[in-house]
Length: 248
Image (cartoon, rainbow, N blue to C red; front, side, top):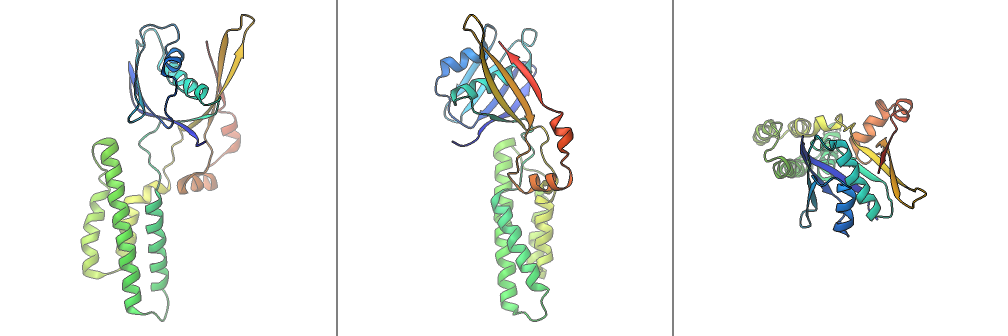
């Protein structure tokens, strides 16, 4: 089974929307887990795009409790599997197409450093790198627009550099295109991602209680995760960040 993910799309003091990685199998049981005994909580599940909207009275229930109740409900539905909580939704990692374009740029650049080189081959490598980079930038802009309603301003310098390439045919121009668009994602890493493990306990009355163990997500899933682990990761401080929350 793929890793369970719960992403916070947006949150306000009295409402929060989640994107979940797996479909809810039993909406009635899931709703009972989220609402508990609080009748002011309203829950709506969109099975088409797999999102959950929760509205609540902030004077009766805390936002954090809603978050961990949703996670608990997802975990229960999937045999108490751990759930990855993604809170910092806008910090996007480098996707596969941008990695391929970066590799093509690197090959073209290394070939340009050689003493003996064929001009036509160099041009072909440059053009291939340009096509991949342009496609990666378009995909990046599309995903930003789809997610946020607009694309980041970092796209605009890349468009100018694209025009410049047709004048100089230089691989350096393509490198600058790639760096202006994806460079910051090499160092940006969401420190708010968590791995939540849910434990179920039964009391003497056979009533279930749940304990959520929250840990920083230290998995390596992309290039910026790897860079973070090499240069910034501190195991001791991360081990001290473990938290436990009890849910009735």
